[in-house]
Length: 389
Image (cartoon, rainbow, N blue to C red):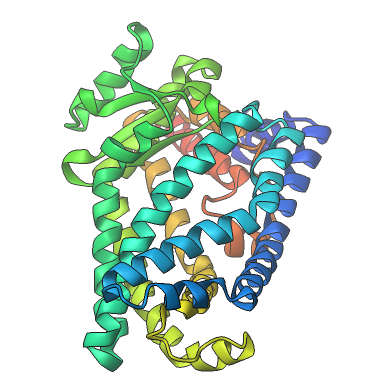
């Protein structure tokens, strides 16, 4: 009997069981609704801070300071204030809900500690970036959006370079893969792709999440492949090899550069639109309509955030294309379609494997697990057909 790719795909996905499939669908749909509710929370937070007059008072007290100094302090203060106002919502969406669906076992104290560290970094980085914005907007006038878009794109690139070596180690421990057949197999795949073996790490992803995952981070000399200890502990050798092959596919194809280019272009467009929309939106919030006033920074951040949200389907489409390309690389170089399929099934716990077409287009950064398993099974069918006499 000939191998049937469609039946094999169905068997893999159905093997999760009806209860697990229903939970995955509920969790995923809930996440998509939370995106909408989070936008409402951000609008409310912005309104509360503007109405409080705290930033206006702070600008007045700092009137004797230089523009950069004043803008940095006000911007950093807003980042901290908004995080405090939105803290209950953050705890619910990013910790409590994850515990309800068994997506994490991280203690609340550790979650809050890491959130505080992330907030401190954001306040400094965003404070500097926004201070640069106010310097530019006061010096270059109407073309500020082009200049600042370029500055922001440069900062994104810098953060991608520094992230793996300076920032990510603050939140997780990155170590070499333990000695054994798994390490030997991974290093063999890396050497075939001309990737230095010292750029492959295991990290304690279980600290934050129970999800089966791996990733590529960094640009140029800082680029590396990292596999969560969850994946290492739950996967068999074929699954580890297939997943590593997928991540190597991202690495050798330079997918991260496409993301940098797309985000940079979108940021420039978002700032251009924000320039046009700033006055009416500030008026709606009863804020100062002068974009050069640091007290109105919440309006600018809200506008850019909303505009970037509308770009999400475009970003998701590029991401799905990159993921498909990385899957293809793994199948062609590692040739373990069943290892790929069984590994993908383990991601279905936190991403509905059978979404609707519109749901996938709008929200999914990865192709559906069912679609990816089907691709692996079709590859297997093709190889079996080629081997047949």
